[in-house]
Image (cartoon, rainbow, N blue to C red):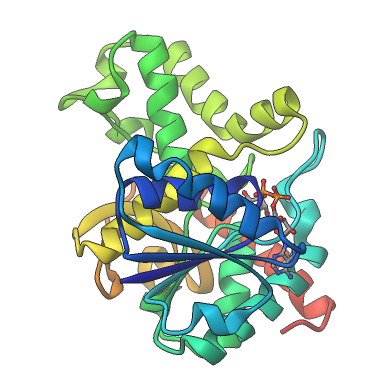
Length: 312
Ligand code: APR
């Protein structure tokens, strides 16, 4: 297995670091446009190999896509991160240009790769990549929902004072502060619904804290978060390269599922060696479906900006 990560910034380097530690591939190529940056990050990661006992080779390159040739999976993190007060949507124009260029370069050297999109606004960047690449929809996967679900579990663990690993919870819809939908009805503590363990206002607080989870961190850190986003990207890649058949909420391109067409948005999917192996088209309540439709409208509005900018 060979994995490439485009963008060696906070998220890309963290993702590469977690994947190296977990030995997800024999070789990981880290690529950045900034001269020497990826080389430095790769060297720093490799200098932990003796300490952490892994054998993955991490190689850093500056814009040399030939070195990414024949990658099985490519993670795209290149682009601007949010600054305090910005929404993910504010990044659209700049990041669309970057993601478009990067995806074209990747596919020149790795035509069979599965692409994992992390750059924001993630749903629109996934849609852009799907539209421009000509790849089948199982091979273009947006990561956001895995991160949002992990934040959902974190918030539940804080409220219940129990380990996050004992909690189940899924966030579907767009990967935006107002578009994501944490499905509180289906969240459980080892099978016990959290709605039976906590009062309604506590559950509502978990939901709202999850929705603004990224913005909260951006305010604290001065830039968008990277440790959980990098680890969430690595979890997605792991499910692909190890053919895990895990259900994750990912941004998938829909063709009638959840009553939506011509959109890429977060839904539960089965992830394995072929990327998205199945979209789990689970029946939502009418309230949840209405929220999902509203979320899809917001994502579609953002996708229309790509048309306004004549990128698609
Ligand atoms: N090709 C390759 N790398 C690029 C390009 C390009 N065309 N344009 C920018 N980059 C690189 C930058 O040089 C930088 O090192 O992308 C990297 C982005 O890293 P950071 O600025 O640290 O941003 P990060 O926090 O990693 O976020 C990256 O992920 O979560 C999302 O919203 C976030 O869109 C943002 C992305």
